[in-house]
Image (cartoon, rainbow, N blue to C red; front, side, top):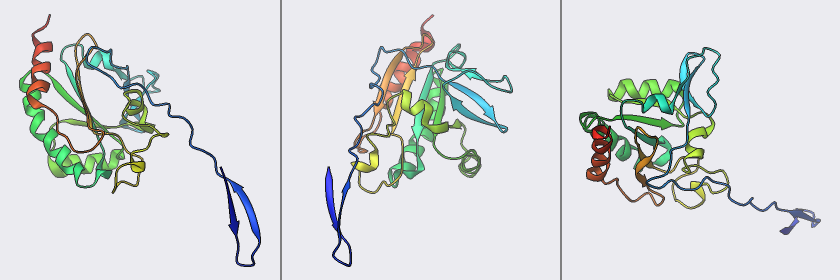
Length: 205
């Protein structure tokens, strides 16, 4: 696409605007799909995500280790969501003990820096783990982040690169049994179905 621009002296120049590349986001996960594998590893003394198992400190943990004994509830959180952010975090705070009581564990991935994660965890006395999703690695593989289809392009009030609010229940066989992806920032997860999915995997041999 070409545009003509006239400067203060009346000189006209033509520029070509590069069209946005076609979207390459991962396909949306559905119940019954296998959850993409990721790893947690230490970088400079703090845990971050990775899509590779290699770690200099040789202390990486894979998704398979996280779900070896308990189903995992994986959520994505971004403080850049405006008024939606504290509501989502409050919902996670309320869900965390219920998820644990039903035999699962909650892991939250965020684009916040490790330093800010530590501050938020201490300030709010959070009893679940929050990890920095380095370079949006996991969010991209789970289909809730895309450079070519940014949220700020369609949701008013958001001006940064952010995740889509989401929750996934991942069973001990790595299959996804519950999915909540709030593309329009106007929904809430079905807690009854979420906890039902967690309990199902707890009872399954």
